[in-house]
Length: 154
Image (tube, rainbow, N blue to C red):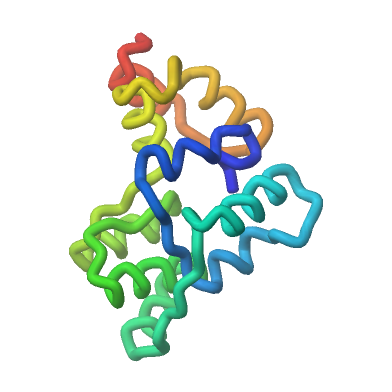
């Protein structure tokens, strides 16, 4: 949702290709609302690069729900179910759980860095500023400096 809010949602399919989300994530996106970014997300589902896959209920899913919120739990369970090597997730607890289960968590900041490296984004810093101001996406000063250094912008 954060990339949709700041007008950069198209970076996701350009960096990651098609993306599968579980129903809990779709429900969290508030697609029926007039919130910033909702129209862009509805368009992404209609275009087909963003689509929903059903997560099978399992003991693993139930255990994950006890450790992280429903969206992260279903995302991790779906990645394991589909035998995907990666999962798109920003929540720190979710990232740790995903790593513990052998998944590579890809967060928004990595998407921005790859987009910059691949010439899809001229600069990371203005996007970080918009994420902070418009989407209230918190990045610590230390992490921001690290990302900007990685992007060659410091």
